[in-house]
Image 1 (cartoon, rainbow, N blue to C red):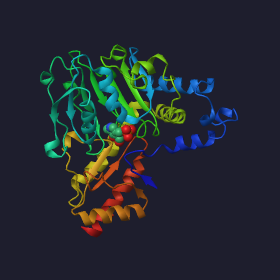
Image 2: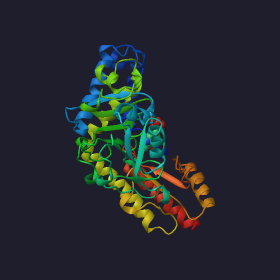
Image 3: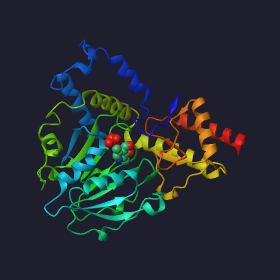
Image 4: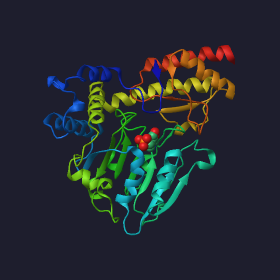
Length: 359
Ligand code: PLP
């Protein structure tokens, strides 16, 4: 089947095959990677390899740490303010969707949050623009969600990011590794692994060193980035199997040509899908064109009844998980890195047939 889930999402077939081949005996040691100590030499090599591949693929500068944390991207909604707040506890957030809403709600428990731009009044159908001069100079950081998984928008105006020393924190859960990224523009980047990085259970945090260990808050040990940075993410037992799966995904990505190649493929896949939506008088997208996500594409037919029928027949034909998020309705196709071009072509062909039959 073709799996268009927003996450956990489809993995590259080659990755699953390799995981299957190695499942019972990792590198012929007679034990599964799931059964060995996180302090064993075999696992240490895995976690080091993941960091090395992340650094290589994203060209992460040397003054950044790569941390492996549990608790999902949702835990970062709390860890970010707990670690980055200074005495005045003030942060600025761009409110671009359901996930930023949750991030704002968590941060508000610990300090003062200023929403500098919001698209809530238009149901988040565009990415709200903001100006650096709107930022209070005493704000401790600016938080943005670079891809809005549920609403299907993305942040593209990287030239708008502050260059005045205010750290930018970015939730990249649903678009990390999908297109070119200049890590040096950000103070902290976080992403749950279950979309472009691997499977659930792991969250990767890329953080500039000067932001580690300076929290103005009495921070619990396991919520302090310094704990992970000092122990190379082995303070306690990390999600070993998730980290191993991320290694396989990153090796797959490197082999196919890294970010430049995957970005090209992602642009092509999304273009085919959007071009079809724009020419159809039956299917449509209500997201502002300039802000459309490459990863998550919400769309609809002309009625709720036809949406339900479409989802039902699509599933019978092997196109899975196309139901839109309950807050948006309609349908959503997630075209993450692992989604092959052929799957998009087949889905579009199926949509054309459906349109001919039911329009
Ligand atoms: N942020 C974004 C942009 C997401 O898409 C998601 C999950 O889909 C989350 C945060 C929450 O991630 P998790 O379920 O790993 O906590």
